[in-house]
Length: 230
Image (cartoon, rainbow, N blue to C red; front, side):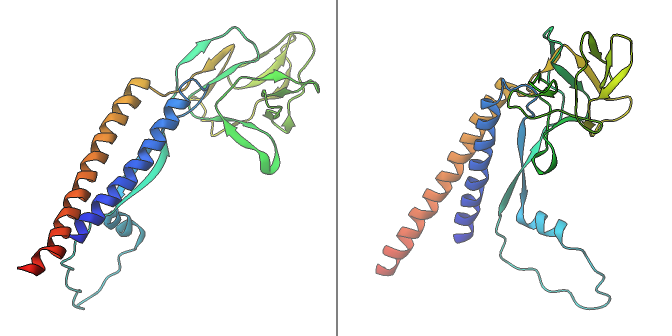
């Protein structure tokens, strides 16, 4: 009976984590380049089995199986890396990545990856995001040329003469699969309808586990307070 209580509570913890992830996805539905998160749940037994290597025991007798079977659930988040919709903006300082890969902004310990390709030319004449973090090129920040310039599908920045000035650093790019599109922006890959359906289903699961906890609590109450009187 206590096992049922523990299993239901474990499920409620996992569903609470999932609800937080869904809420975060909905909040970032309009954030350019945002990748939705999803919750992956595994039982404790599966997680333990994957973590422990199996060794040969030879002729040694195995330990008898335990009669106690408690269902415990682990919840972990994973990123959905599928491409979001790419829309034209006409802004030459906005770039979309199609396929695998991310932009790198910042440097050193503060460097981070993003799919948000909306940039400006800052006071230093370099490409940066709205927070002032520099976009990384081949060997550091990218000094933009004067006059007309463009960005090729492999991320190279070329001037009006076709000379390569620098190249945008794309981490995780795969040859033949990754393309940089100038004048476009990648939207979030969050589907609001799917997230709302997942939220409703998750709430129903939470309520079911809640009822299990209430039922076990009522049974334990009768067992402790009434069974002893018989």
